[in-house]
Amino acid sequence: MKNKIAFGLIISTFLSFSCLMNVKAETKPKLSGWDLVDSGKHLDWTGSTKYQNAFNRAVNKWNAYKPGVIREDGLFTEVDVRISDFVSSSPIAGSTSNTGTIKFNTLIMDNLSVDSRRNACMHELGHALGLGDRTKVKKAVMYFANSEIINLREPDKISYDAAYNNY
Image (cartoon, rainbow, N blue to C red; front, side):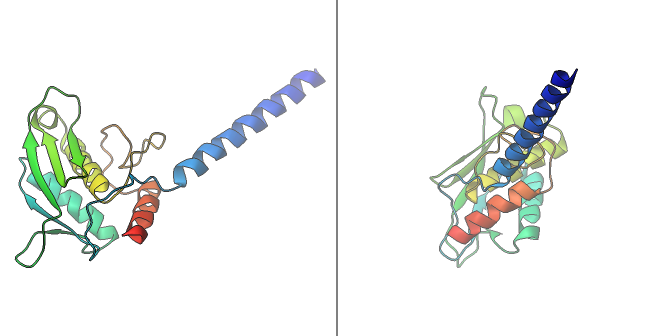
């Protein structure tokens, strides 16, 4: 009986410790190693998408945390990223490249809910800002799979803060 209790305590302690390790690991910044932000700490975009409303709402969410970083291109700014749509049988909703593009896959996006579309736009903007995918925090905008999360969570903010300090 004592051996079972001791074994149970050891397993319980191990599981508690491993859960804490996963939480700590996921609160560290997840950066992509590149970003599209210019030397003035702005991400100036141009172009259009079928999902412009979702994209604009995503811009507003990011800018609510760090005001004025993401802005539509104007007369006196240089374009950092171009947004557009594409058609592909690929299962990805969107794609951001280090060459300055954010593209949305209409075959996937057309079948998503309003919140999932907004999540895809926020996620791709996160990549443009230099954030990497999260693999363990499912409630983060930067979780690697599309979801209906449309609010920045602590792991997203930690990564954004680290990226912003690197600009």
